[in-house]
Image (cartoon, rainbow over all chains, first blue to last red; front, side, top):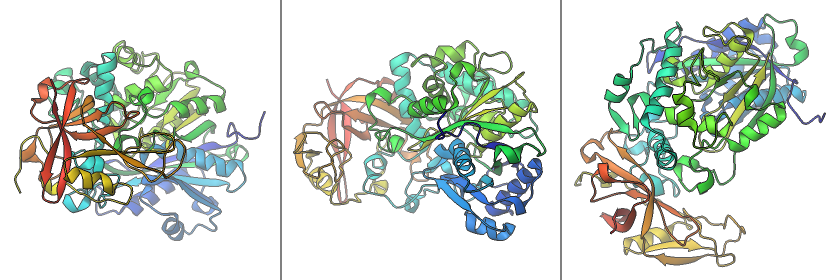
Length: 401
Length: 143
């Protein structure tokens, strides 16, 4: 066995979250307040305290900086702090980053936290120039590269991902019925959970009657706009042994992507062979190799679901069905909990529980492997978590109990 | 400012450029489509970049293209994500692949065609949309 692996060299021992809120409803708390509440909850879940923390592994959308977190929490000494570049693509990978710090001895107890407050910042127009009314995470003055897209009106993530899914429909016969299956099965999982913001059933009629936003995506193909924070605590396998819960072991993690995937949705020049993908194929290959498992071994999958169609493309890229076959795969009921062959987003996902930029997916994977999930997959041993299909990096995490 | 249905209102258009992209917009203002090609390995690069992504050299020549292409994908904007778009909706935004350019794709509004009949693979022709200080590529269905 090579030393150059994360397999079984780090474990998740704590998860915590604030309540989830509709956009802006978390006021007058600040994003930092939310981050600290989630971090303290995760430490408590682990049976650890702030004095035990010596590392931070974040990702681009964290909206909080280690310096202020450490100062306010009174962390004795920060020995590791890093963040993945990019945005929501790094959610799962931030745990890989924490695991790398732990496995190499750079830190012992690492916090990964994501806090989000959309009161003054709406992701729905993320790439619109701020001077023209844009108020998203990436809204900024136009750049020499961005104007080649924005001069057409292409300025929102939903519009951009719609391009990928529209072509998938053209090539493979994927339909809005297939998108609806993702929306409805995810909603069904959210209904049973007290933490979910969407607890009413979603019917096919409601799905198809809802307003179109950017074809082929209508209202229910979009995730929600939310506030909240989720934190995850990663430590060494030795330290993990005598904490509050059975440890959840890291089997593998990867973050990155093919170079010519590049800026992906904001340039649309990705090579034809993987234009209609989630950008995750290289990541899938590496995370499976590191873990020594394949798709048939995965008991539950937590796919970053900012848009229904991107769940379909991830099912293909992670090998749960062939390329182009995700529509029929979901139509057969495969992703439903509890009866499907691969229950997906058993927590209700970004679409129906809450959109905390992918960190709720990590929390759900941990609860599934502890056997404490609300919608428990019986005897779940291995869970896959992905970061958002996005520009480089996209990321993945495989966990086992 | 005039708002036309089906095309991005001009107030949202920007010609921010750097030395690598500026020749594109200068030619566009003269209604000429030019694309940068590496003089060392003949690879097109788009959006224009200072380096060739195959041989990593900076040598470049600007090659004229007639702008006839095929619709590679599209979306129909039905919802105004920011204020000021509503009166222009619906807007059909297309990704258009240009032949003989090793897969260069332009992004532009698809004009002169109801959203319901737009389909991937349809031939399109370049059309220039003039705004105050330059021109933006758009497309129309081509016979």
